[in-house]
Length: 576
Image 1 (cartoon, helix red, strand yellow):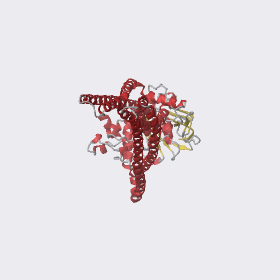
Image 2 (cartoon, one colour):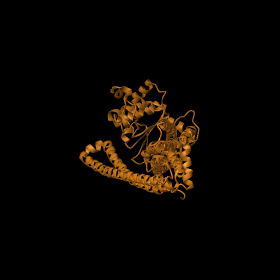
Image 3 (cartoon, one colour):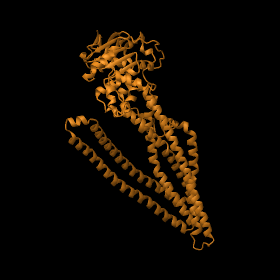
Image 4 (cartoon, helix red, strand yellow):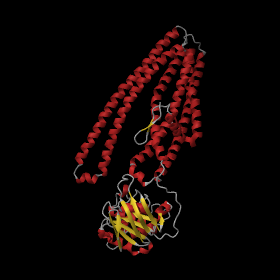
């Protein structure tokens, strides 16, 4: 093989195990188990001890046949029969105990590695820039953490050890077989490739159909998920029947592929069984000739047949195990890509402002998202928001209001110019401290599938119930919460499905206020509230202007008519 090539998405395509890249990547993959090396070393020792037991049991069974096959065997041999049977049972018991031990050790090691790797992956994802999440779908990241790690555990744990077991079995069985009869061994060696070929042809077509079936099931599942997620739209267009027909078509494809898979599976299994049985019959025929010519005893022929079956079975499983290890390499490449990714934004600054006032300045700031680097959202923006003042920034959709929020929170860095807080460039401030002191209520707030109290007190474990309720009263959501049977402990459902859009904003505002930020950014918060609530919430926000710097961002000037200062965004710049 040569060096690995990069496929789309940065996934290496391994062209052969002779590749340096292949071995380097395989070594790094296995090094994930480094903390479990003692457990795995013990498991490997159990495996090495268990391998000879299969061959030993075959030899003992052969000796048993030699002693009791002949009709003139003395009656005293019956005692030895019991001894042989006890010996065989003891070998089987020891073999099962050793295999059970190494299987358990490998399982524990795999779960430890999986938990550690998932934690590292999640930590690596959380430290990435927002621009990374703009370019990568969140479901693919979840798939990497959940499924790719599981593929590695399965393929480098039980399957890898099983592969080692199979390889050692083949070597040991062949060695003993050649000792018994080199002629019979050559017959087996000539038949083994045919058996393995038939097994792998069957596996190839079965896997292809299984992959097609998984794709169809995936499409059917995605269709169902989208239909349920967009149930309001489906109902609005009375499209239930059309959705059912589309789903029926997807399921029909799954049915056809399942039928083909079942037919192929039954046919190919019969072919594989027939091929293996033909090999055994041929072996018995040739072996019978060898026994009749008194070249070997019948017991050795029995041993030989047992070892041959073990050897062919082990050989047949190796290609599948190699394929699974390659899958683990492919999955690990995606994992290592995430673990190795260094955020473009420098977040190592440690400076904080001891007495933060909340004076915000934009000094000739220009900004474009990494996904569209040639399309500036903000161009040469300069503005100043005095400390502890209340200001509204008004602009049409796409004028850069949300980008201003992102820049102040330092979710992104400005392409040109600087964003200043109390006269200091925010790029020189501790980013965790900055975000703790800049509260944000987004136009489409995130509501977690936990209780209302937990949503309001998000990350604030020290918040008391009275503090949570005070924040809820500030955003006028307290009375609503009291209508729930469980009050503040009521679960709001997936993404806050039990709350209206306005109520989600109120919960998000309570969450932001509870953290006591020195700067509060409200992106379309007032305009998103119900008319009966918006004015009262605005009055609460305007009633305590000296506590914080409050910035409203909206496309609806009428919603901020009470705000003393309004800045209008025009073409990426601002005035007011």
